[in-house]
Length: 494
Image (cartoon, rainbow, N blue to C red; front, side, top):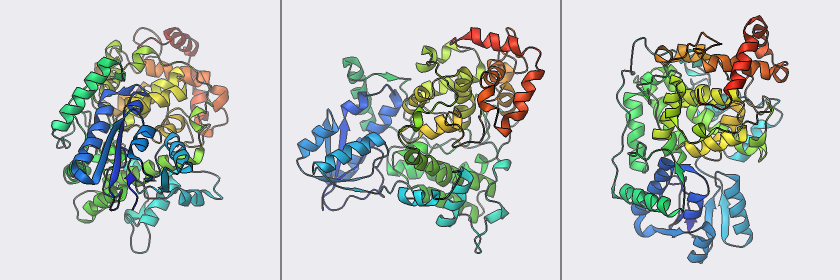
């Protein structure tokens, strides 16, 4: 059996390796190629080194300047699972042409092979998530009655999972998420990153901090167990809510171990479904979580390959503004707007915030300011600890910025301050008023929303879901003043 080369996001037991063991490579060139969040690099290195320690003699662990140098040092061909990025796929295909890679096998990190997704797309005029999710539920037999109908009579309980945070609450009344203990390996990683930064080998952004996410299979299973047994029940109702004093809310925080390949997505979904079958979690919460794991996550993975390499450069809204330095550098202290200050600070301090701060605060702000979607995709990919090449294009270009012309979503997700006011506790203590469009107290999200609609009116004119707000803007007596005000704001922090 040829040795299996496993990448840093292929570290779970479902990535098999055979009798000749595995090759694990730590490439300093790959670490320094982009300006990553400090904690993201820590997680990747810690996961790689922990896996090597677990495997012992079964693993060949090479620390080199690059992957090609590692294969040259190994001196024998390897087998690989298909990588999760086009650049890595192109690289291993070149190695295969040179006889250095013996085979490129389908990844076990996702439930649906790419060729089967392409078969599913045949003859479809639209590739909507709800259609794919139902297909996934049926083929994986998740939350189905014996006759094939959905448990509870509906495929989605999303409408039940949009409650604002409890009034007056500073946190959700749920047990804390699983917190791993750092090891000597983590200390070694921290020392190496400090030295490499000092020597100019790499440059990071964001703060260092205690490791918050699993990097081993044992830790990942413990995190899954804690979520399912103590937090899943509360997940659904408030999954779209935000509280400044509760960064995790009732979210699973499993995106990091899943994207490191430590958990099989089907085993994660099965565990949640079993909790409902045992009467330990309500259907709406379980269905919402299953939709995230085998619906949205796999949909985004498939679209990355389906839409092709030019997708992330789509820019149907003609947004070309550069990311300002305070945003790019995660300088939350420059920001007075309570929501953006807290969310950007969360990215700085943890490299993670949940999906609503990503979509409605960071994404909404970027859309309203007209940030370049390709640059924004790169920012999300490198600043988030669960960000990878395949994760962010559809999430940012399609969902967040509506830059793909509607290939993914039927309307832009930009909104005014009223949404943030309803779904969070930010606005009560903010110097800006979400009901005010013009003046010193004008909410930059509220004013920015109307400026965004006015700027993109011609591009959105044919979208029936945007017809009402586009008409409403004509009824605003202060529209011109709001547009001028937001233009004058430029790239200044709000």
